[in-house]
Length: 329
Image (cartoon, rainbow, N blue to C red):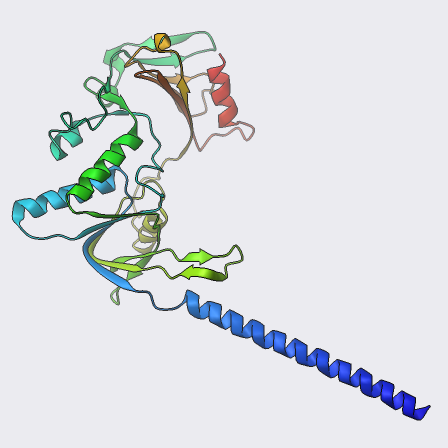
């Protein structure tokens, strides 16, 4: 009896030892894995040096890159310019379809018309009206003398901004600008004095759990004498710089809005090429800031949308439903 109990206890003790051993091995393995993951995520990045790094391949970023290369040609002093863009291709994240004022492009690339930057047959602004909607079926058409000059559209064009940005990207590359789509800037690199030294691109190959996968690739640091942030509204890097240098101090509060837009393809006989219409009022109430827009673009597209100020007071208001109500009126 004693012998049987002793053997049973010995077997039980052996099983406990094996369980403890496996638990310790798993713990050590996990610690080793976590340590390895931390080492990968915090490993030193490779760095490349440029004269100018531009974050964002939108109209502003690409125009700046082109102008820098033009200055290079004028002065004979070489300027290395790099543009990083989070989208998979230039123009992919551009909210397309807008009324375009060409003055800046006239200064930047005077022969853009000959090069068909806006397409073979761009839509020139024609019938331009501004309406205050008082109800679903009525409104007041404001005479031109009551419309601010900045809202007059003589000489402007209704365009696809995405196409224009792609054209600007091609022009920039022709001039020697290095453009890297698909490489989002993830953080600012500061020097020992706290000045902006450049940016770091995002790490690739990280799982949903935040752990590096087999395909993990460490991001790169791009150092520059000058770094331009052309990310658009509330860009992550721009917000970092604004907060770090307190750039909003003594400034007016920024306005925000929710925008909804649709592009309709309709029969060509339903199009009034160059028609531009902006509205205020219905379906929004008098306490809600916002309005709608409608543009007719050749050959058969209608660009329509609504913007509602983010400070609307009615918690039950749905900008999307208001937009649909406007379209179905």
